[in-house]
Image (cartoon, rainbow over all chains, first blue to last red; front, side, top):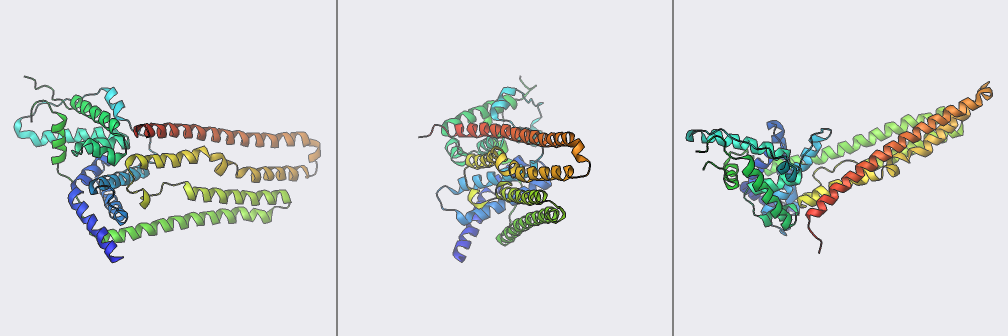
Length: 182
Length: 204
């Protein structure tokens, strides 16, 4: 057993080093409260470490990490949200709602403020989405290609392509810069 | 960044944001895993203890009641409650971080949870309502028998029987409403399952 345990530990260390930052972003997208987010992040790491006892290499480490992290986050949020009535929506519903977000133009020096503003709005948008669409947009923002998004989520490639198309439309529509058109 | 933010710009902003990263030593994870196992053990123990309290509570009626109908009614109620507790334990709560589900793709993971919930609602008659019926029926009949055996009750027999029929009817209506509400929930869950299945694309 020690060699299995070593493999499990090493896989976890590799995954935490390579995807630790992505897991942090994912946790923030699932939980806005900072204290609860720490608990969620710990649960994601624990789920990841436990899962590596059965990692068989049939999918890539990245796919495995994103699947486990998503499932742990979805379970966690389901437990926390039990009894709460907030309705989560799909990308299609968000697109149909047609809300848009304009930003006042900021001077060049305030880029960090501007980025914080963008991120805040992105998180608000993501937290409205149902778990599956949330995962698709998160993977898209992480720069994961469509085929890999399909592998992580189990959604067929044609639907992933449609969803990415919607995500791009929503992002273009909602994050245009207002008041600075010269 | 240009005036118009493209989705690619947003991806860059997203990936460059400062992120909360934690590094948990594996020994700590091992301890946390043991703690989780212990927590599940104690949760199960609490459920069994709660079932024992119910058995002792209802069981005491068995000795208090004089007629065999009431005794049998209370015994069947205890059996019904035990059956419900067993079913709830078996399929009632979402298994937190079940190992075999850890690395399922997200769609299958959500589907499995929805199927679990749908089955729970769709079979509510079998595991939640029907187990109460024999015990409650015998209990009501026993109460009716006891009431009618009291002195002077025969003069009001019709009214007493009507009263018990009303109680039985009320229970039946409550059961029917609970069953119908659960069937509705099961149908809605099935719609969500169908929507997820559609995302898998055409099966080969």
